[in-house]
Image 1 (cartoon, rainbow, N blue to C red):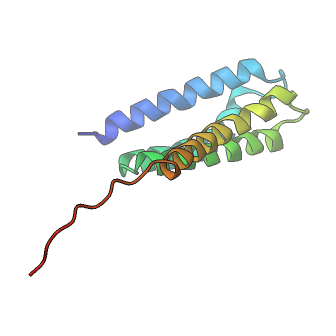
Image 2: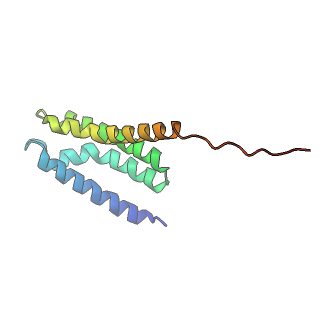
Image 3: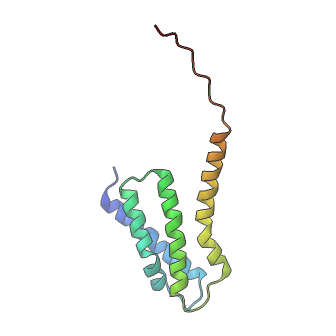
Length: 122
């Protein structure tokens, strides 16, 4: 069972790790605190959906959307222009989730349904 304190600790650690990693990748003018404030709401919303046991596909789509919103928020709080690879990094989860969902839909469309057995009635 998922205990709320475990979820809080896990997502707080992920929030801190993401803030520090993005701080290392961004220009010096953009601090870890600014990044932490920009991605904080997305981390909290993701933790709530994790606690509510959202279906895996819905969780992945929501995470990708929140990651893209966080990337936009980081660009807004940044005093300088972000490197292009960070802008692309914001689209990677959305492109990955979209590609996987499209591939699954493509696979299901090409599966042949099994014929239904004949049943005598009456």
